[in-house]
Image 1 (cartoon, rainbow, N blue to C red):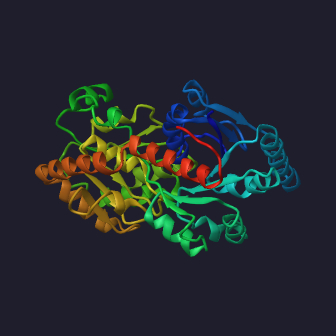
Image 2: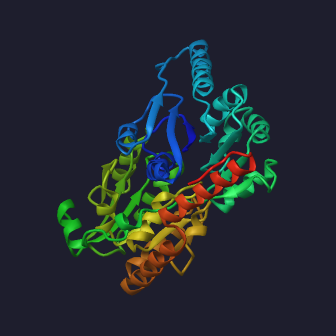
Length: 387
């Protein structure tokens, strides 16, 4: 019989972890698991698509509140609803994604006596310094987990530093859907759809507009070299505006880049967007392991990325792309100019990037790793499982 797997997350909004789950969870349905997602807040914009792919989604929406008492009450209410759900459904595995779900949901999973509890961390732990008590709470919860998962060696090292024993630590890289990104439309067709010239030098960044994604660094880098780049260059910025879009547009005007930078908002067909590009960028100040980077690589694009988190684990400097220090617009500008002036280097790096992602970061391999981990933990707990 299929084993019940409950994923707990705050919401299925459009972000890296949520997109990862949308790719992975439906593929577990045919591998011996009955899967559902419990959203501790609202369902999120990816919920309907998750359900269309066969995965149940439940959400708890207490609505926004400016009052501290009501906010705390809302958090308590969500935890109680999760507790009642876990008692009623008795899942074999409860798997937490992202800090809010982990911190709020773990007590419910313990009180409901769920035997197998897992946590996946998808980013570096800088948030612990910003929210008082988070580090202490998570260290306590780690001891309650059957397994703790990082999506890069960088994240795994941090978890080890938080006291997670090696016997519980696991590395599971993200995976990219190769048929979608590896066999994309032609560059000419993609550019025609976007109204771009076939002779333009097109840069692209796929990242929500959040301060730590480093868009300001990128704009400053382009401002440094705007007169040294080919006359018809353009930067496409795809991603949800999380509150800094207007400020970034002001920066574009101040830096004299208005005719060069195009804000696209959230883009559903990322593969077609990437097919139109020559160079891809990710300028984050922190990362776990970026979905965008391996999508760039699967498309055959050379990437310029910052040396944070799992970025250098995906992009090998001078082999599959260029790796630069974070928050360093001068080094970033130098790397951009280097690729802009060398089409053959772009081709070589892009081809090597595609080969690397096919060898190490396929979605099929990622799903296999989840199945392998879940099945081993089930067996360790004496639970019969046949995938």
